[in-house]
Amino acid sequence: MIPVTDRIALDEAELDFSFVRASGPGGQNVNKVSTAVQLRFDLRNSPSIPASVRMRMVRIAGRKLTDDGVLVIDARRHRSQERNREEAVERLLEMIREAAVPPTPRRPTRPTLASKKRRLEAKGRRSGVKRMRGSVGGDES
Image (cartoon, rainbow, N blue to C red; front, side):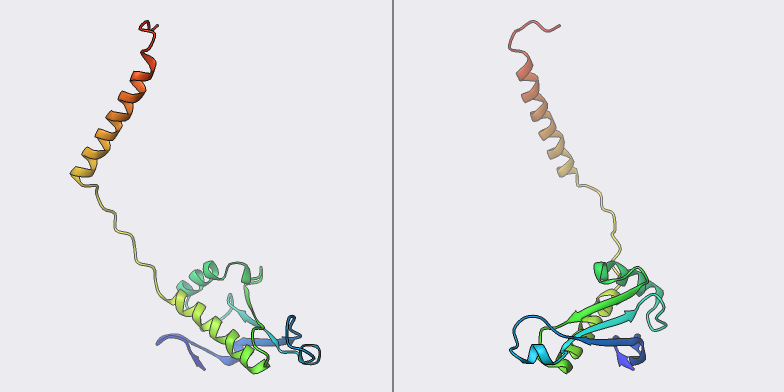
């Protein structure tokens, strides 16, 4: 089990790793060794993730989430397979930790009396400017 928060822990069997060849610098190593890691996590069917966290995870994941509800994370920054694997898992855990924090509800507030007065004065000034624009000819019909 991988601890995520004090109430959420992931089973390592839920994580599916596949290794592919990484692009970019790395010399001959890049042509011989499959160091890039693709982590797949079935978010939709995971028993470890509570429903409220799952809903926030869908929003956070964005394009990393497939139509089947599988979260795909690519890690190819490091030259070793193990470091890329650790980075992919850490990025998944960070995403879950972020989703585990419930958003603070917005408490509606009322505008102050001074702000209401300022708004009405600004509206009055603006209407005066517009009123002065039309009265050049003197004859309004």
